[in-house]
Length: 483
Image 1 (cartoon, rainbow, N blue to C red):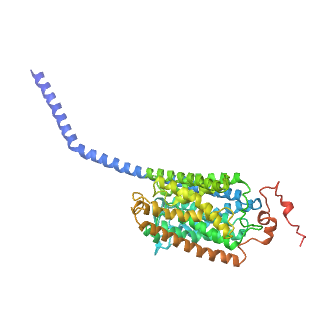
Image 2: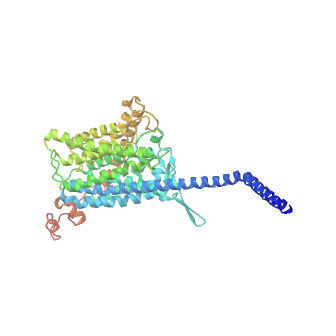
Image 3: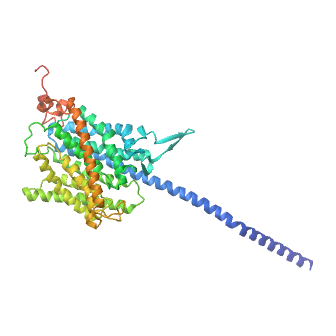
């Protein structure tokens, strides 16, 4: 009997111990769970933000590499379209312009473009990347965005991506001024464009405090900022330079190597996906990025087709050169609105650009301005058209201010801003270009020496030939003893 009683007491003690333990566990479980949950959510949020930053940074860097690779495309395109006596000079200018522009963009360009605004016209801080990082107790901290940009990437990544755009603006100019520009003059104007001229326009449009930005001027990737600026600068430069030697008006000199030109165009088309899609500066809205890519492709395709058909109906021949420039015209035209329009509008913009570029080539020829590669026709005219087209086809679900273009029932509000912004950019660019090139011309640094017209600029400036078997240097250089 005593043993039975003892066993019952042991069972009771165990039961009480389990009950007390369960009560304690029940009392503290919510607190423990909350602590675990809070820590997990905080770490998860931190990990998600770090992952998003990594993805966005990788995206912008990769697309920036594509935009920089467009320098190769411009070099090949222009080298193929010029005469064989100017190939080396064209390649040299395209190559060195990237290096010169980088120094200019580092020194002042990036700060003027994306620094804290001064009355909406200029940036006033961040020169030489002074705001890109800070040192704190031996540790380095990287800044995000810039004084005038809330881009979700660090300052150094933004700097590189926008530098590639800046290099494009100056490279456009070399095409229209090919075969007769003093090489030292090219170095000077490329630096000025990267240091001040181009950054001012960037500030107006892409800086959060820029005066055109505050008016909701729409230019997603640079039809106005990059291409209109480059196009009008090239036109002024070509006008002040005068024509190439032995130029016969009404007879555009044929491209010396359409293979180079075709490869260059395909590189540019490929690089344009970085140019346009990368301008989102993030992958957080993958649908928008996809829309940009589709619109870019449609405009390039319809531009090429429209140009080929237009030239065939005129001359009953399928001119490759016209098709190449037609595709580029479509790309330039859609660059402003690629994120603000529907695909059908992108296709229409490409069709218009493909014809417009060839019409403008004829107009420039009629004015007797020598533009060897059609730089103004492609970049200037189609850049203007593309920026204005946003005011016609902008979709209210996509535009920054939720206003529709004229053809979608939005009235003239958006169109008026687009036309006014383009006019302001042209006015500044033309005035500045005349001053810049005029000063270079006054000091004899704009046009190459007359001797280069006789022996070719490649031999005169570089002592080299891209085709020594058919264009030998020894046969073209003057004897030093001859006077």
